[in-house]
Image 1 (spheres, one colour):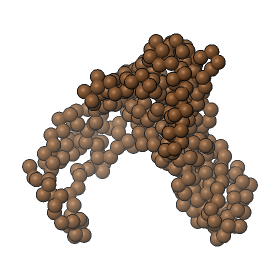
Image 2 (cartoon, rainbow, N blue to C red):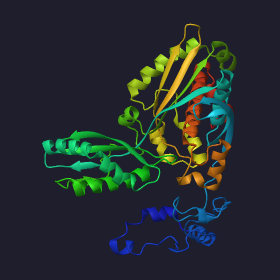
Image 3 (cartoon, one colour):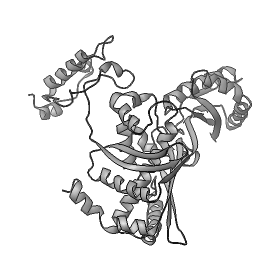
Image 4 (cartoon, one colour):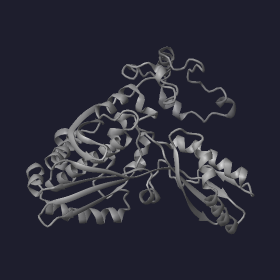
Length: 407
């Protein structure tokens, strides 16, 4: 096998050398086949010495993969643990759910499972989807600030025509409103849509391109534009998304009796409330995107299992915890996820293992995305309850000693 250290020490390729770079095997007409996957596996083995014994073993026909991956070579097998039941009393999700969590972090499934047990003994988690928007945000470039302001008024006056141009590109996307923001001669349009059961980033991109072309053709100045002026903050956390919503804005809430909390976690509701003040101050001081324990662990594990675009965790994990210690000693706890981007149709959700995991939750296919969003929020709250209690009870490190990477 060639010494890879030596390769790193070689001089950079010249333009002539780079034009003869070794290409990964590909067949333009029949690339999604076992034959081409095997060719790429052999290609990797010849050039790196890696055997790919596990990467090359998969259980589905590569023909299902167009639109999901290029140069298909094999699979990454991530262990899936099952947590639950999570009792949900939502508008869309109602009942007991067993939640598949794909992770390599020991203690994660056990922790979420404990939080779900506690929620069940409290009668379940109440969930509500309170808002729904997906955006693309083009920026139009006008000669000066006055013309940019007047351009914005023109857009408002022609909203119906712009909506018609956008919606002509999609069966399920609906343009709801256009928010506007101005910097100098630039007019940013934050075009908002509902997207059915799809996450909708590609859908809204195509629809907004059509809308922008209509604007450019019909506005007297035929202004130039860029399709994304970056205030849609695709796959990036932002304050505007926390305030204005991107994806689903969903709330999970539960009232926890002091007796139940002490029996399961060894922590009192008064201790929880005291810690809430400490955590709020720390989150404020650090500028955190989420002021609870964390939303990213549970969401990432669910996203991997169910075929979501995992990069959307960058936005989806942001949110706000709100809590109150009630007069009778019970503890009201809510988590609001402000930009949860999920799908139950399209993208990776229809791939074989991902579809199976959505089917475990009864969430595969059309008409299920709000149900899935509510379950996601309930899972986040369960994890926050368990992790926060572990920190207060002194179980945080010992649990990792027993089940996690510390062992």
